[in-house]
Amino acid sequence: MFSKKITFNYFDILQEEDAKNMFKMIPHNFPKYFSKIPKNLNIENMSTILPFSSTIKTCPGFINLYRRSILVTSPYDIYIQYNEKGIQYYHVGQINLNRYGDIVSVHSNSQFIDYINTDKYKFITKITLPITLNTDISLLMSQSSYHFNDLNILPGVLPSNYKRDLNFFIAVEKNVNMLHIKQGDPLFLMTPLCENKIKLEFKKFKSMYPHLTFSNLKKFILEKLT
Image (cartoon, one colour):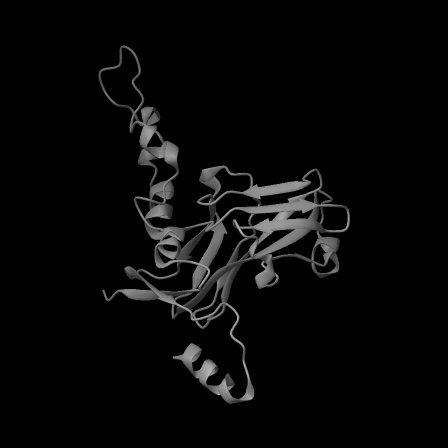
């Protein structure tokens, strides 16, 4: 079976190594505690291995999830302070990258939260990563629940014709006044919806937000479509 390719275009605030470190495939996408788990429990006075002595290390549902998925991690520290109206303050990276635009924002509750059947959440926070995608594969985005990092990442499917910036959404609970995501923290899984082997490719953008004029707009669009 032929392999499929996902191209990650990273903005110039990242080095190539930083971009590559954001996306982890098996065996580097497993939670850190995974290596400490034995395949079977050592039960005293038991000479044979019984089914109930097996651990999650032999669970096909767990293993196949990470075998097929790409773990996306944070390229930098993200600190968000909330008040009752939304985001009071946020700081991204060492030099505060919020000067590049709305890396962190809150969706209006009238777009979603006002209609759900629970009052547990107060905001939906959108975080945009310094990456765009170029692939012909549909990708399932989902929370990496087995990392237990307390981030309520909302799931979604990126269609095969998606060629835009990579962002994700966090449902913020009412008792949360601050979020601190550290560099390297697991964010979410991207699972290709195909059986092909996946190859990752990384290319650098010249600028995070190109200054588009009438003369170079056509060139910019054509570059991103090819």
